[in-house]
Length: 535
Ligand code: URP
Ligand code: ZN
Ligand code: ZN
Ligand code: ZN
Image (tube, rainbow, N blue to C red; front, top):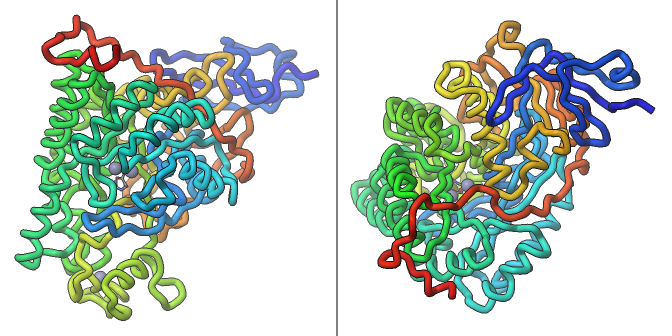
């Protein structure tokens, strides 16, 4: 009987705390042994993977992925259908070194969606319809504050589904919660130790600015960013911090995109509050200019870069954000993969174009000034930026982009890379140490990079990626490394550019409670926090 099914040798192992030269022994999908070297006897019968001196890390845990979701974004609640399902989304994730994804089961304001358990059950059927290549779990998005549902179903989300996190919105007409509703939901979440993730943008300010832009006929995609300047995120983060402090609820801000919001988070953390923050690749690699990249500013092509919050105004903003990665203000680095298709493969508008056409009631658009087919919807019609679903793809590029721009440039250490992309999301979402770790006993979810010296840098084209999307926001970007092997529970699922995994192999993950410490570092002040609420 072989001692190991697979061994990884000659790697530089990186954890959130250490870098060491060790070999990994894998048996039955688990890491069983770490050793300086293995004997011939140890290796007998095992598949041997030679890392050739490259970094070996725990597989990526991406805590923010939208799959199979009908989004209700846009100030008027106009969404679109996510282009990736569990098959294509998980495929794309594993080809970029991610071995765990957490996606969103979404409540809507419609009556059949009152029950959160119903929402989750129907969403699980979407995952089961295709299966997944890699392990996955769910967050739940809550857009109503029905007391009876929250009281009855929140405990069951935890016990029956292992769903220990929910996302709440302060913007988007069809999803946002008022301050009172936010308090209601956070209060129940706090009682059930469910982590509250907050999308912090001031919805009223966005709608007001959007109206003002429209009055001035500023409706091209670029003006999406003008409708959401950093102050919009700055106000909402401060308000959410104040409300969370009022009821002593730990919060995680998702997709922080501005230095202003990041500084609010930092200030709250310095005061000892349990405030965590996520950021994403788009805030480091795109700017407002990407929303007018194409020659004709009204060109529909520019819509492909619309996400909320928008990327920061200027490339220099990213310098401040990198500091937040380095100094611990940001807890996790996720993709916010939210894919939409913009192509027209059958001579009929599909994806976003189909959606926009149905909203505006206009016939098929003609080409824009640049001659792009089907591309002047924004300039010619009422199909302004507010009708474009918000979100961009990035689950496959998340890790290699951060490796290229932050690890290799020395902005963050290899350990910080692992902490942000794997260990902290695993801890935050109750998956550690099964995920996010290379310790014996952990699932053998592993990324092996190419040795830096032998990797030939390349410039990205969308046809290299494995999502079901007709573009990447990072077209043309230089990459200086890419995962060479991805292992999921001991199976090599991606090797040298080839998919070797099987769809349906990925398992649903029932998660535990957040393992990030919530100690506040000081005595609680009864003038500020309402202890009596929980007596
Ligand atoms: O623009 C974004 N971020 N779209 C995805 C939905 C969300 O708010 O995360
Ligand atoms: Zn969001
Ligand atoms: Zn165009
Ligand atoms: Zn998102």
